[in-house]
Image 1 (cartoon, rainbow, N blue to C red):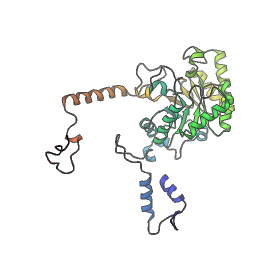
Image 2: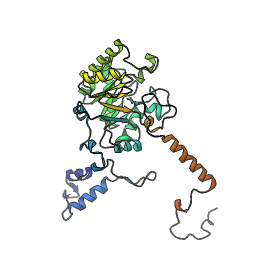
Image 3: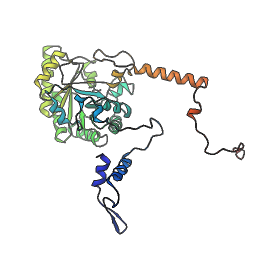
Image 4: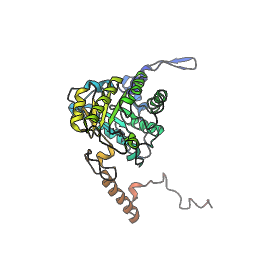
Length: 349
Ligand code: KIV
């Protein structure tokens, strides 16, 4: 039974004038009701984009068997995955079409990352993105997906002033953006914020190691955990976040042996980026994976396509077709409904 169907049946009787309309009109079959419910749920066909709008998630039998998890991914279901050997698949997305592709591919978690500042907005650091921009992107992502857990990044400055402001900002990500969890950077020093958010019923994903938002205090994007002291600090950070209630912890830019040991020491999943194969899951930035970020990719990225090249070719093709008149043709144009008189424009000066 689809979402709209459930909503329909749960609706209370509707008062119309003096009459109360029954919940299920007599003589209407369940099939008709289901069809009506389906149509109610159907999004209006957009002017642009594809006319084909198949269901967001593929039918279960199209998803590889090992990834057939019947229900939506949640923060607790990810914790339950720890130790099962089933890798947690995470990727960023910042808009409707890419989020939809990520869902279709079977990813478990979508991060609306502040990396959007770099790969979408063209900033050199992640510091400039605003809460409103992440909220807007999260809404688009949420409209596109239904199975993966949608996590929104807390932008720089939104959890740096007070516990109260942190909660207010995270609540906006959840209530306005539709995020099902938030992520923030930092370990021991941020554990009290994680605890406050979890107490406010907002699941939190931690993030330790290379912290892009700490670029100015650290003097660059630095791999962490390379020395004994640094590795111990990392473990302490991760344990503090776990203790505070984080449901998962991103390990970014960490030597693989250190990340693997931290993963063994924790009871919540670790999600690695530049942290080797010993983590419970992996995350990368969408644009890096498909080859849509300009310039060379960082060492930890594996590119699976060169989408920028595909787009370049497509755009070259359009430019050339418009120039030489091979676009548009009759195939792409509309006819007038009835034959217009030859002088249809003569009355207009
Ligand atoms: O913003 C981001 O994309 C991240 C990463 C963990 C990929 O924080």
